[in-house]
Image 1: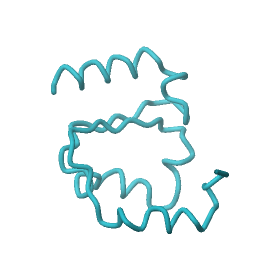
Image 2: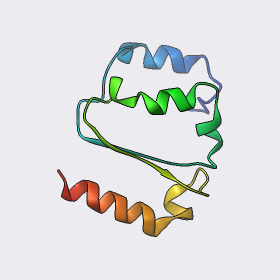
Image 3: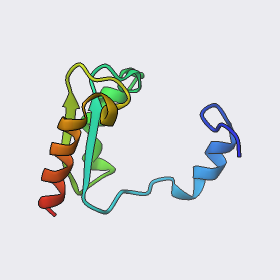
Length: 88
């Protein structure tokens, strides 16, 4: 229990997954106003997601949207999710 955002324990918990890839079809969606997408290195990571997510079908950047995409842009998120699921 507890908050793992700043917890060194998180590295220990994630250690077994080091180098693992997401091997299922995936959709990545974020908002261009989400501060997480502004972290150092985030743009490069997003641009190269297929290195870690080989079956990435699409990356969606929602303009004017912050961190809570499903609340801020519900119609856009639902449209993208439905299209993604129909494509499976």
